[in-house]
Image (tube, rainbow, N blue to C red; front, side, top):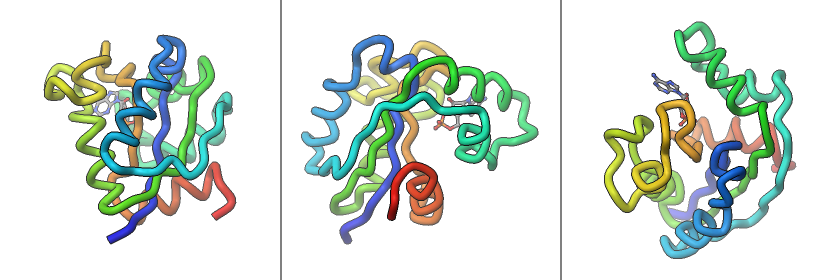
Length: 134
Ligand code: CMP
């Protein structure tokens, strides 16, 4: 089934020049980047994006990380796009992420884990609507 998902390359990934490599992995998985933009998240948008994590111990660290530099946000489309993107990203904790996954290859901490990809169709719809006219 064709799906749409939200993907964000976080400031650590952008700063380290990983955008082209990540986009190439997305294409390699047979997915299409329908739209892509570079932006600086403000605190309000970052808190909305991550509202399910509000109140958790790592929330403030996460928000500070995603607003310190430019991110690249993308609308990614294709067959089973949500699952495929989660597989490409790998486990949230870079130490547990398999080799060959984006976080396994490039993550440097649980917060600086390079990429975010929506975890469900409902999250994808909500997260995409924060950044794209859909
Ligand atoms: P992401 O997939 O963007 O979703 C929530 C983010 O919170 C996660 O990636 C990490 O960057 C960050 N984070 C920091 N600490 C933790 C933690 N202990 N558990 C889960 N996510 C964490």
